[in-house]
Image (cartoon, rainbow, N blue to C red):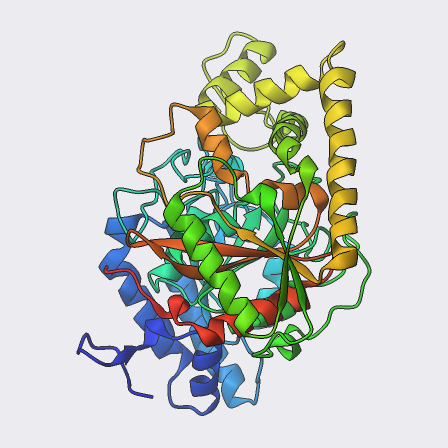
Length: 495
């Protein structure tokens, strides 16, 4: 392997390595964690002004952790993620590092504790290079709702990277980090993964601890990895998946070794293609890419059959009642008293609370709080929230029935390629429709994996693979087999 930090043509630069490639070189002592981290920090300095993926860069911490990782490697530590630089989405609590949720409300908030996923990465001796930009409080599909600045898609900087985990997806796509952690409430890992040509996994609800994840919609949120390939996805899942008694929704189920599912063929697997995911208005180029990818899955030995999930059409409406309702309850804690932004020019306690929320929250967050508060209000609870929960049950049962016939389902990740910055920001309904293929998965609590599947008009297209609860191994197997038979995941943006 020809490796260099230089810009010479034909050489693989350190920051372009995957986690498993870097681990092999670290273990053989062909590179050091310090060299790898310095290369990544150099890449950040080179491209960050063009894409704005980071809210915070923790250079000093990263260099210190890299030196500690080198000491651990010399002592025989063979952890797969030891010394590997990563970014953490800015709604995951990091002790001593600002966790802003890309909101003025938490602009100066520094958590006194680590999220469980952070504790597990620290145990692996990972190197934290910073926190990723996002839609404010994870509410958005484009990363334009960050209170600080929009993140730009590296394949076309006039377009969005997707959201809300846009910063982490872009950082991985541009080699600013080797892998990243994001969160997914309605597609916030998978949609930006599809828009940026990287791998993104939303695990089963309860598979990865939510302890230390700043809540948006507690019954929908999940933390998951964004990586350069499926092998890295398996390695990161091995590190972060666990039962955690501090998270009341964590499921006490044994965690498998996901790397055992890296099998390059699909013989014997049955895949369903739900026709409802090929929605009206889907771009023709996206549809063609997905059907070509499905044909490749057949060539790899899978049996493919069209199926129907008729309640899918109601998922968008149900989601935009359930998620804002839970957001309304969760964001009530930001009152300007305990932590976060506090309005100082108020005449009374109630006036201070009003002004804190007026100036601390952005327009999209306020919009969702209003929607959720209305849905939960007296006289409307049964008509909206209760009915949405009943629809949720129907959607979940429909998936259960589908998985009695199929090992997995295959769909587009998004009905379109990345759209232009500003194109939908003034039209919330059109923005919400961007998640039409991803949000049913959160409603049902099942896992979903987005992998690079091709390009339409020079822009990335993601393919989504869905499985029954706790079947991440199956999704990883399918994604790995497809990846080994194609080279889409190796394409890098011209940055």
